[in-house]
Image (cartoon, rainbow, N blue to C red; front, side, top):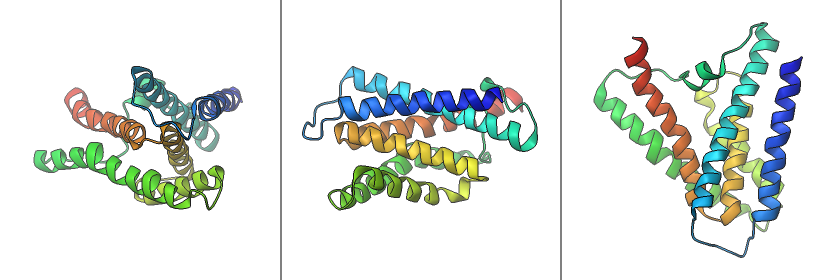
Length: 194
């Protein structure tokens, strides 16, 4: 029961934080250069999203399977995708995961689709449509509905990152940072445990 309360409180804090950013810091007519505070904000948002996904996963595993879930350290160093042994293919997959996929996905979802819907529907509907389509695109990597929700949350955060300065750079950087951690884990886990 306490995990449910902690999860709801943490998700509420994340929601309030992102709402504050959206309402107080978002100035739609101002496009400014990125500053150090923006990079710090992106990094802190990454940590908050990662921790929220951990709480959701931990809650789901304790409710559905009656387990204690994973320790926080184990979650951050757990890899859900299969490891590739061939170094050339792994390098190509890493390049795709860290550079190509975030660029393509952010240009498609936040750049094209979001701006296509701008003026036709309000921001909440735009965010919902873009986030659901983002999660649907990642269906091959989703194993249960809780992961689908995690992709929705991540897409909402990316949407808010984009809307904050109307710059794809913030969303691309956060997306690349998130995927980059997976690549680092792909490299480090086999060295440590196998």
